[in-house]
Figure 1 (cartoon, rainbow, N blue to C red):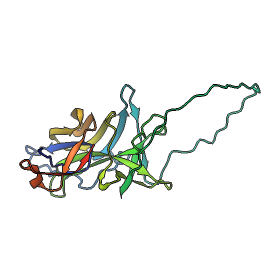
Figure 2: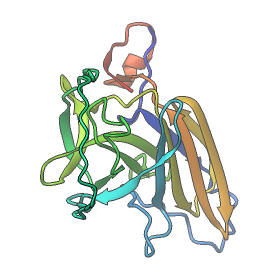
Figure 3: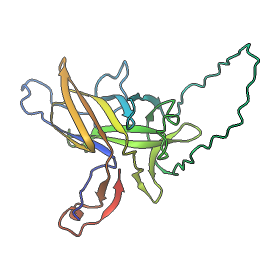
Figure 4: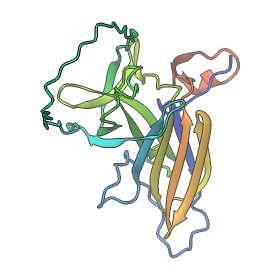
Length: 246
């Protein structure tokens, strides 16, 4: 079976092939930030991740909140009192379905996670991870080609965030839920995208500009991707994948 070489460990990946030819000669050369882009703020309004949402199968879109490494949602300490002293008893028995949530390993530390206060109650934790991280960065330090990867995250008791990885192969990200549709909006500055390529099912991508600043939007569901260890494994029929990442 022919294997595919994937640069990165994401389950949904988008590549923006940057077209910088045709800029006026007097205009400065485009210099896309080479490190992972931060979340957009009032101060950082370009070359940043603006928003992330997920839509479960048959459900509605859930807007996720960015929590930086070390942060968590505030605890609601409000108490509710009532003057109704009546009591009621119910002798019926409700048997809840047994759901086994897999244990995942952890990889490198990251800046934070996109998540929801209702992540578990919405059933988003069924594959073991507690949030998403969108890593937008150039392919390497020599080019302006942009890669945007979505990977799962785990958070420890101190709210330190790491990439969730496969137990038996922790160099690679754990699988994302194939039933989710993940939507991402990235502010891409002066980038002029010539081609958007998505790895996922039902992928949609959009590039737009306003006031000379561009935005890339994409959405799709995770799909299994064989990962090759070296480029020669992508030639012929003898290549072997070192991992399969969804």
